[in-house]
Amino acid sequence: MKAPSVKMGLSILFVLILFGLQGCGSGGTSSETGEAGPLSDVKFTVKWDATSPPAASNKILNAAQGIKVTVTGPRITTPISNGVNRVPASTEETITLSNVPTGDNSFLIEVFNSAWEQATNANLIQQTTAPFTVKEGTDNKLTVTLTNDLCFAVAVSPPTKTIGVGDSQQFTAVATNADGEILLAREVIWSSGDSTTASVDSNGLAAGLKRGGVNIQASCDNRSGQAGLTVIIARPKNLKATGGDGSVTLTWDPVSGASGYKIYYRDSPGVTKGNGVSISNASSPAVVNNLTNGKAYYFVVTAVVGAEESFDSAEVSATPILSAGTVDITIN
Image (cartoon, rainbow, N blue to C red):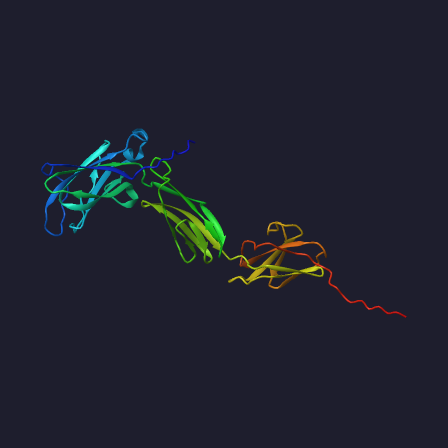
């Protein structure tokens, strides 16, 4: 499979051409404006960047079915818009809005797919916005070239993950445009489906807060991707081991909600619940007996609630030692 190319581009390239001519054309949908003042027509020519990638593979160009231009400004009480125009099979579309107040305004251009009549976020495949100035007594023309840097899909990885309460997990997101090109310069907004179960910061680092399941979501330009995060009972903390005569005593901090604990141990480092000798129904302090004096042992502890078991605690080690005793000597 061919790897997606990487493209960094500006959201828009627009040129405002002001000629010393009378306001142009007709058409467009007028709207209520605020305080009285000069009005003018504005002709928007929207073009698609059909050269890179080629038009044959440009999904923005091929999928575009409807276009909507909306103008807002300090003298506009209700946004001025053309509604949604059906886009012909070409690389540009011209829309004229009438009775636009002169002065500083902003435009929003939205491009929709085949369900263009609905004009919802789910059908949005491209959008761009920028400020512009309308001058009185001139031919106000605005040319906007759209490039393929709208987020068309967002992939979050890893797609699923399980962590314990108090643990964290780093998620990453990759945004791509409609041609599958990676948008390196685009930032995503992270959110948690339940911020009481797990939080997530602006860099995608999630933290488990309580047991449960939650979706971690990354959004960009009304598109989003998500990963499933399961939070289980916390692992025991502050595990300590002390060697005794043929035994080791373990202590650890209690875990909220735990109904019991399990101990795993062996005589070499790297003990886990998968390779250690297990002791169930343990509680702190716990004494592990029948050990060999002078040999080091390694331990981890897990918390249990029902059928759920936590991740392993940090590993600790201790060496059983023969305790010093007293010897009575009788001399005749």
